[in-house]
Image (cartoon, rainbow, N blue to C red; front, top):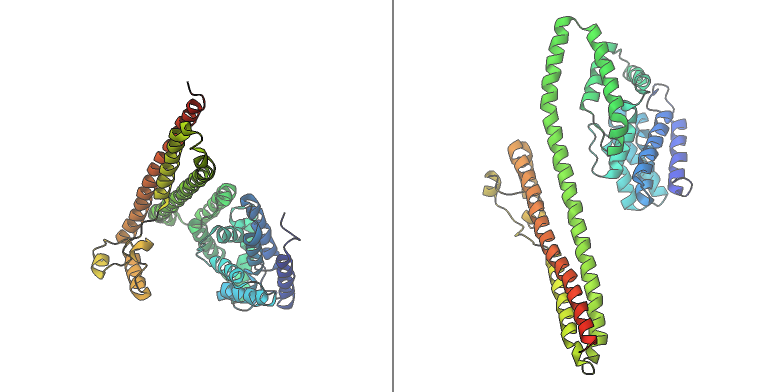
Length: 395
C-alpha cells in the first residue's frame, strides 16, 4: 500500500480536512468531506489495480483530495478554484512545479465533460464518478438533487432531475478498463431503473416519442464514440509495438557491440599465431556488423520537411497530426489550420486514418529490418560457431 510513506499525501489530507472544517457549509450535502474521502478510496482502488507508484501515485491522491474543495468558493468553476488551492498548498510544501502542474491538470480533467489525457487523470475521473455504477447511486443522486436545491434556492421536480440524470448516464463512459469491467454493468442497471421510472410517469404517446428520440440519439452517438475508441486503441497499440521494436533493436545492437569489442580486443591480436582462425573471426565480425547496421536502420528516424502550405490544408492533403509536417511552422498558422481541420469532420477523420496508416507503414519497415537483423545474427552465429569448431580441430 501507498500510505504513510508518502508525506505529501498525508499533508494534503490534513490540509483539505482543515479546509472542510473552516469552510463548512450545510448546503453541500453531497460535495463534502465524505464524498472526497470516497473519491480518494476509489482512486486508491483503481491505482492498486494499475500498480501506480512514486510520483504518479502521489499526484493522483493529492488531486483527489483537492478536486472538489473549490465548491465552497465558486461552485460553477470549482475545478479551477480547487486547482488554485492545490497550487498554493504545494508551493508552501515546496513541491516541484512539474508535480504541481500535474495535480492541477488532474483536477481540471474532472470537469464535465471529462477530458483526461493520461492514465493518472483517467483514474481520477473514474474515481470521481465511481458511484454511477455502484449500488449507492440512487442514494447519492438524491443528495445531489438536494444540494442543487439548497445551493441554487430552486425546487427542481423529480421528473426534470431524472431526465438530467438519464442524460448524464447515457453520455458518460468510464476511461479505465478496470472501471469499465467493474462498473459498466451496474451503471446500465441504474440507467434502466431510471428509464423505467420515467416510463411510468409519461403518457403512452410521450413514451413512444422518447424511445424513438433515444434510439436516434444512441445511433448518432455510438459511431463517434466507437470511432474515437478505435483510433485511440489502434494508436496506442502501434506505439507499444514501436517501443518493442526499438527495444529489440537496442538489445541486438548491445549484444553485437559486446561481441565486436571482444573480437577486436582479444582475437584479432592472436590471428598471427593462429592463422586458422582468420576465416571464423572475419565471418563473425561480418555477422555482427550486418546485424548492427540493420538494427540501426530499423530505429533510424525519418524526418519530413516540417512545413505545409495553405493550399494543402484547403485541399485536405496534409496530415496536421504528424509532427514531421509542421515542426518548422509558426504557432499561429498551425493553430488556424488545426481549427479548420477540427471543423471539418471528413478532414479530421481522414487525418486520423492517415496517421494510423503512417504508423503502420513505419512499423512494417521496422519489423522487416529487424527480422533481417535477427536472421543474420541467428544463422550467422550458428555458422560462425561451426567455423570456429572446424578451425580448432584441423584435419
